[in-house]
Image (tube, rainbow, N blue to C red):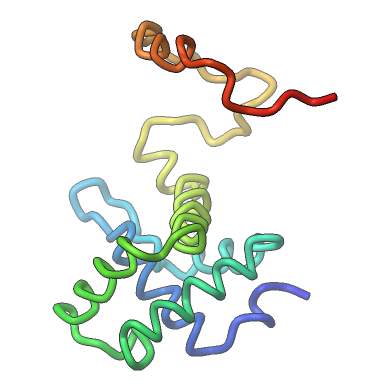
Length: 149
């Protein structure tokens, strides 16, 4: 079953509203917002294992709003989103990740970034060398994870 069938109409409307807040459209860069119909269709088609947490995030947003998020005015919607950002936990992080991953694989967005419209592999993308010393504090920590037997 696709996520489109698992999300109610109200949840899909709220998903579109919060997606537009996460990545608004830009006339300057000639890119759609994450509320674009094509991007929304991609989100719904690929939710898969993230469906449960995304539904939890959308339900949390609606509880904070006291009604569907999409029905709020811009000022109240922003206040609800700020509260959600502070207390949304793993569900909020999952919702944002899902929106961003679908947004940044849209052809229009890739074109605006000057990227080829192709899969990243097998050719890969060259990344500039960064400051590897930023990892020194992590390397210096003692092992905090338990070792596999």
